[in-house]
Image (cartoon, rainbow, N blue to C red; front, side):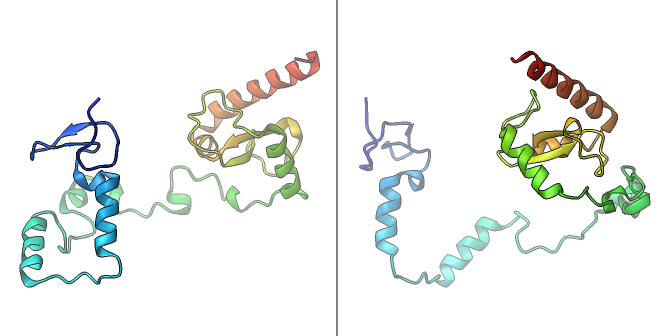
Length: 188
C-alpha cells in the first residue's frame, strides 16, 4: 500500500497535479503539512502585501463578497405576496390561539426529568438518531395534563417534528404509549 508523500504515514487517497500522492484531496488537509505550516507560522503575524490583497480580491471577484444585496429580491416581491406579510401571532397558519403562553403543571421540571431519566432515549421508532438531547413531550399537547400516560420521551428533533400535523402525531404517540403500557403489564 502506497503511503502519503508528505510524511504523515497515512495511506494514499489522491494523486495531486504535482504527481505526488497524498492522504487528502488537498495538501492543506494532510496532518503532516498542517503541522509543518503551524510550526512555520507560530507566533508570526500575517502581513498581506498589496499583491496579496489584489490576488485575494481577484479570486473573490464575482463571489458576492463585499456586495450589499437587497434583503428581499424584486422577484419575491412580485411573485410571492406572502413573503411580505406579517407572519406572527394570529397571522401565522400554525397559530393555535396563544397556547404557547400556557403554564406547565406544578412540579413539571422534576417530572420531566424523571421521564427523561427513565427512558434515556427517543421513544419514536422512526427517529433519525441524530440528536441525544432528550425532551418530554405531551402527547395531547395540553401542558396541564401531566399524567404519565400523556408523556413520552423524544429527542428534540422528533419533538419539533411533532409540533406539525398534530392530529397525526397525537394518534401515533398515543398508540405507541398504549403498546408500551401493554408490554409493561405483560412483563415484557
